[in-house]
Image 1 (tube, rainbow, N blue to C red):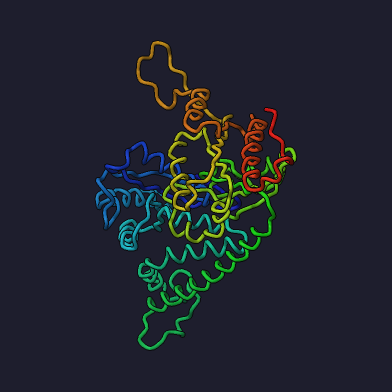
Image 2 (spheres, rainbow, N blue to C red):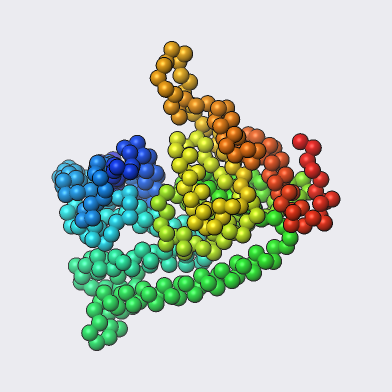
Length: 416
């Protein structure tokens, strides 16, 4: 039997499940499952097969319908008969407690949805006390409406101290209080404590931001894994952790950057993603405050990704939810070295597709859309970095002079 090893342990095996609906084409579903597979890989799981179901909308009982669920069950049973384990099934949407309970009962293996997988990755990535507190709160928010399903698992195990993370003990139950009620009370109390901690963190971070002096604040934003940390390291000459995996950065990192003689603050923030759990956005408020208080946003885009226009839309929608859609933005199209396209033959009369667009044509298109606040670079290969630095200098200088006009003479206009 072939074993896939991540780090020093055998990876768990997973099947992925997604829907093709009237609002989501087969192509789009496959793109979402590609991302879900990357999420699973980041969490340490190896994908062995995908299942898709064509349906008008998600089934409220089984998500995919009973027929597809039987097909998935038979596949898992066949693998078991051959001595192969299937550890989990990961679904590309958020599932209700009822759906999870029915699916697990039918297929007999652990079920995760997209939200729980992202929360698992965040829990793995959280290193600082702030990030751990934010992730724990998001986990409890996700867990609370699903307690009944979690308690059925504990009942089969002969009891426990709380539904999936409660800190209580069975001996603390009051007269007539069920285990489910006790678990709910414990989690609500824990959430209240975490919210108080995060409120204190908010106050501390606000104090830190107010003490940073009269410097323009620039925030790197973008989809996850587009190269924000690499750009921060390049501009600030720092060594912030950067990795080709999703959500390599959870904690906001702030560095002082100087271009020519102009200093400003540059922050790296957590990456956005499709279908990002609302609880995560709420819990990471103190981290995302760096975006809210920034004077300028650098929206970093992985231009080599086949679906980068939708990733741009996801980021823009999230910025809108944060109340940041009116901030000045520089579009930074990164990874030009990895961009690939296929030139059409002269006698090919079929319509051109996205795969037939050259990098030069893309540059002209996006420059026409965004105007001069647009730059194409490769942070990895240092391509067009000087052009990027010049553009950044001019935009930061303009904002600085608007805020502190008496400093105009300190930062001359660039000759370029």
